[in-house]
Length: 432
Image 1 (tube, helix red, strand yellow):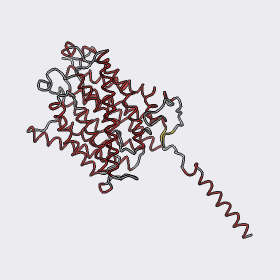
Image 2 (cartoon, helix red, strand yellow):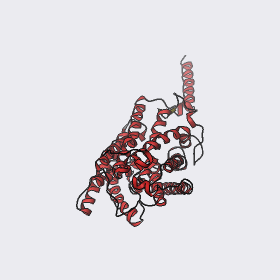
Image 3 (cartoon, one colour):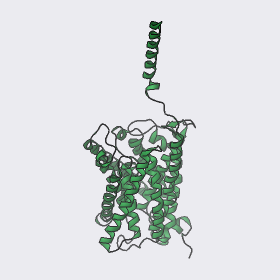
Image 4 (tube, one colour):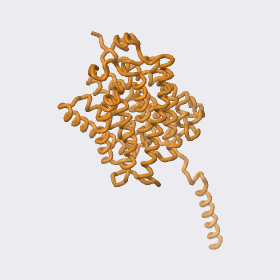
């Protein structure tokens, strides 16, 4: 009897070992998580809020009164266009299986996605929407480089093609299983995917389009700094979703990402204020909120990998470097990147992407490097920055030169003098 019991136990042990060794038990099948889904639905709304109305108001306050509606219109139309293209094929090019460079079209129009399809613990439809809000704000950032002087039709065509040819491939490289993801590049929420692509492209477009009349000494100041401050506040709130949502879970990683994001923004705003106070004798509203945005852009790629002190360090570094980058771009390079897209978003995102290699060290509260080292991670980050800038700049130059040779880029002198609100949209931002 005892021998029979031992034999039965042995057989059960062997059976359990075989089952747990099978793929179904070795790797647990992802399961739907309601808390994570609710969090990402919320953050999707926050990130869309960054563009509409946040970025539209931030940019709108910085231009002259006769062009305020034109730049808001650009943000709205880019949001609509990017959404349709994201469904049609851009999501598939970004996140479907493909090669190391770009995804295939198996998820075009979400043809293979059902209500039960999951990405990790999320319904894939929710993941799609969250990523779509990133695809909306990224080309919208670029319009800050050329307000008050570019043809509306050219902006629309450039933005659509740019989403497909620049944003989608780089997203696949970094987040969709592409070659930079396999190298374990650190870009938690878009230092490369969003800020380096948009910033580099903005610089290229501004260069080929040419400056505003009177640049740089005879330009009028922003028409409504209060509007810009309100827009910056919306961006700051929305950035909680931008960085916190990129954890894709409602857990401590999301909480820490939000914490370091806030600390970087707050530190950067104070530092920019002090820099202006020292240099010009008084701090400005425009400068202080620009510093906040610089801190937000700089912390974005690092937000999920660093601790609170890393956020403070990035706030200081981002504010100082971006402050001087504004002057370099406008007065040394003489490029009219009108609303400082490259100097703030591009430089900030690139800086954060590079510094995360040091700030992710556990001694600073970071998560470490997995199987790599600080030096190997630094090499990967440099490669990621170089490749992203080269691709974004090169494709943007091709697109903008093709548009200049066909539709034309620049509004006429009379259109610019009258204001793009009235000449392109038949409306005025303010009734006298």
